[in-house]
Image (cartoon, rainbow, N blue to C red):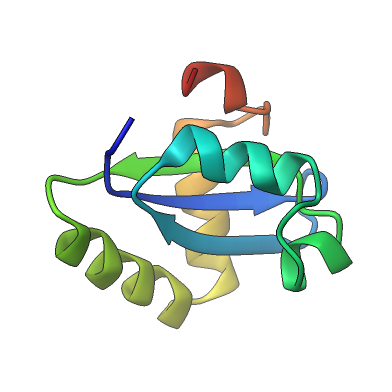
Length: 95
């Protein structure tokens, strides 16, 4: 699946949030869930896919990622809660 996507992973409800971008959402989600991505997400246990947004182009996805990363934590929480108020793991919706 090649689909530009911006996503957020968390370690728990209202916990640590990691925001990223990918062209292959199922693969990238699997890597985060299994701790294969070394760095911030594995250090803080961000394994729950709590929000994602698909885009037509990678350029659009990167612009959106930068917008989200530049925003406040409150804005990130609002995005998550608007799509996923229970903070369910959305991994199964990708595969």
